[in-house]
Length: 114
Ligand code: 5GP
Ligand code: ZN
Image 1 (cartoon, rainbow, N blue to C red):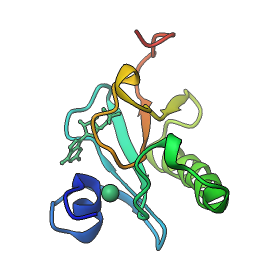
Image 2: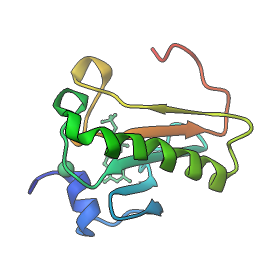
Image 3: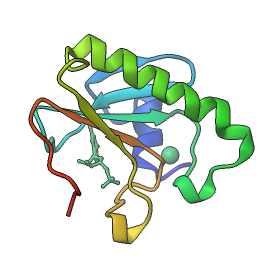
Image 4: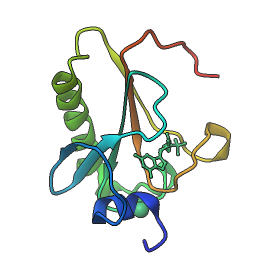
């Protein structure tokens, strides 16, 4: 997707502070962190949001959670805990139309998010 910020990050056209990368998934530090640990985990494949997920994405999206577990361990937040969340659409506050999972940690997180 030509105009997608996260596709540009995948392609290296926009720099990012990478935390994890493999052939299918990239994770990088959020540019505007909402917690001491705020990582954005994305599939390299452009999927606009949860609304556009299909059955063929199931393995890929499952893999994201294996990666999330590894990132949490790497960043030392596994024991204290963390949140993984995906905003879908305007009411949820999705601003980048490339599916992504926020990993938030490093402080006590309120629930529900308002
Ligand atoms: P959303 O609001 O769509 O759930 O989350 C998008 C996230 O991407 C936001 O937390 C925002 O700070 C982050 N973000 C937007 N543009 C960039 C960028 O160019 N680089 C990085 N590292 N994060 C970005
Ligand atoms: Zn994209």
